[in-house]
Length: 319
Image (cartoon, helix red, strand yellow):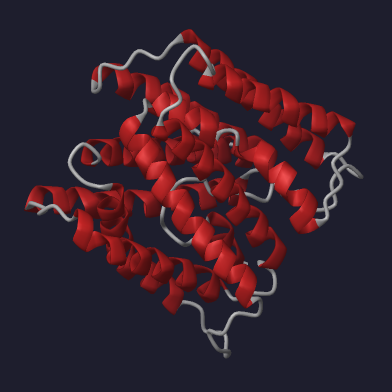
């Protein structure tokens, strides 16, 4: 009996599809918990349960140096942006259909391209610039200004995408000079401190079953990241990154079967425009002499989760 053997690119695509499916399951749990708990409490518990998992990862870094950042200001901005991205994304997931939240998350390559200009000194030529404009038009299609009221969830989703893009660009700027432990520890502690300060004002007693959901949610993020590390180890970024768009399928399935959500056709149209724009930017970055920094193709972690460790950090530890 012949054993099915996948090529490295095919295996990478499969790992990515499964990884993003796990991320969608994580989002499903967050949405269910969001009906009962404040976003601050959700982020606090997910960060708390992530702490021992990330500690095990950090133990593996044996480089003889200190935990003092090489770029303290960039680390501070990155840590705060990570907290804002996680809080905003979790609030958006709690209040909006998942399909709409994903549309804004998918816009992150557009924002990364724009932020790379001042932060990385990236030069964006006409074609990538037009792709960004087309993608932003896709965001407007999803928002439908004037036709639908702009809610706090929509604003939070946009903030999550922007803050997450900022985290990615800063990671690209300082990632080669900072220790992986530093890149993980400071955002993780910032998450815990900020949400712990807010916790007394929003706390709701958590039954054992929900504590289990928080714990499972933290494990799911680690599993998803591990799968993405496998994906990027096997396949090219231009093949792996577009697999995130498969999440719109899970959003539709979960929305209909669990939350009785039937997104308008404009959501799918806008998402398609955003996805095509992001894919075009990724392809342009893969072309020689077009991008000196390739900020989008080097962004390997899905924007909008609270775990401080990113796929790029794990990949550096494997090398």
